[in-house]
Length: 215
Image 1 (cartoon, rainbow, N blue to C red):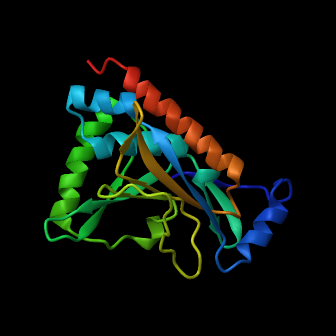
Image 2: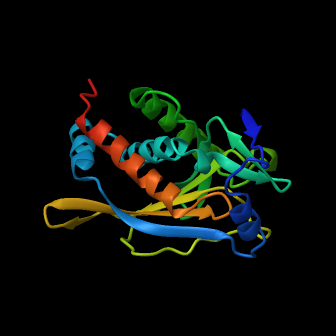
């Protein structure tokens, strides 16, 4: 969990950071329909777990944007080398637990690792997390039952600075398969251009896995 402090004396968003960090609701977010046509074909052809495949793409994309790895700590900004995801795992009683994953590995190594971690999380059945290790998390969730055009996320008081990324049920539009992907970030750290960069990288990782041999 290596990180560095940003030098606020040369940080070009210092004014933006101070303004948005003073707000009671300092978040910015949006929902984009992402094309997964070819990815879904690959998932079905190779019998891959849908959620974990998308989770890998999302995690790699988020870790490719420095601002998504930044957090506010004691009114200063720290930036992690890489961030883990903390995602919800459905339980048989209709509730859920949390599972933490790294993604800094090849995709074919990630899938068996992630399956094992999810099974361990199901056995543990807890939503309790170590507060000291929350800073480097990207919070992930999914609503596989509905396709949506917007999403309201629960957030803590005082505000935290962890990005939240959620996706819904995929749907057909013409000859394409789309999935709604929502992003919510602290506006003191992240602007629209950074969120756009995330979606661009997400398209890149989706394309990469779609076109890979996965032998």
